[in-house]
Length: 329
Ligand SMILES: Cc1cc2nc3c(=O)[nH]c(=O)nc-3n(C[C@H](O)[C@H](O)[C@H](O)COP(=O)(O)O)c2cc1C
Image 1 (cartoon, protein in one colour):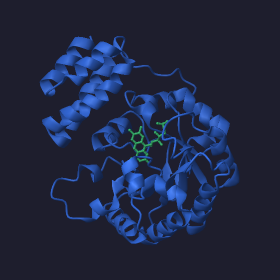
Image 2 (cartoon, protein in one colour):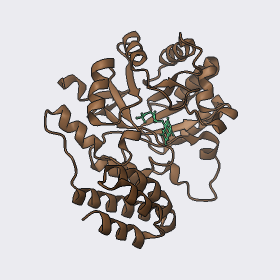
Image 3 (cartoon, helix red, strand yellow):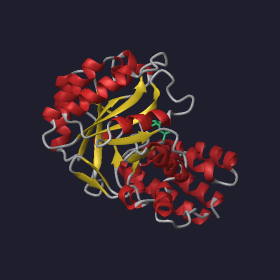
């Protein structure tokens, strides 16, 4: 891996390694980000946060927007459709010390689209650029980045809206674009279009372009760099159940053999993940959250089906550690 690929910048934020933890709704909370950082992730993002929710005085703890001193550099991702409220939310994240403000114009979930948020903005370039301008004006010195899909629907083979948003955003001073190279319409089906990612990097040569889509293993990340020339890659599903991903990528980049955790090492990290999550949310909510992660961790185990069923049946912390004792020895 050439040296030049090892550090990159988002605005004035220098990142020592170009493999990032993607925003992951329901997963990329503070405990998971801290775990990934301990295992080598150099930069993480929150899951998308609705601008209006950030701005109201919370009645319950707002776990979603919590960060900590050891959780930097961090992007706070916001979603919404009004320039004023998006700008106000960005101002708030700036005051709270988020290093980067990321705008979600990519989410394909039906509820977001119905409310004209997230991926809906891929069909409304004028509004997307207006929001971007308002946020950049409000975010002070914080770099602003965009998460985009390649188009709204499959019929648009020229990706006109993508180019309009990307050009408008860079003209307005956006620091980077992260591109998940599928249309909003297909959500996650079919392969991500890495050729399109390469053409975006080619067109915006000196700008920071982050590639997303189908990096499931550390060698896939190496492949994406080689095939697209992006400045960094963002890893989502490939990290779930394999937070060692970041260490593995660092191994490959340094020409070492890729680290593969033993069952005992997996047990230690999965136990640590539970403890952090329990400390953050309390036992009840931690147990519920960790069941989802358990299903992902099971993929690496020699008896994945049995383990998955055992994780799903967990009711409390004691059950969780009993499953680890049963399966990871
Ligand atoms: C469960 C899940 C939640 C996601 N949540 C977000 C989100 O909150 N914000 C966002 O920009 N992308 C979100 N994404 C998209 C990912 O960040 C990423 O762009 C996409 O999954 C493609 O990358 P991958 O092939 O590495 O998974 C989510 C994806 C998944 C699977």
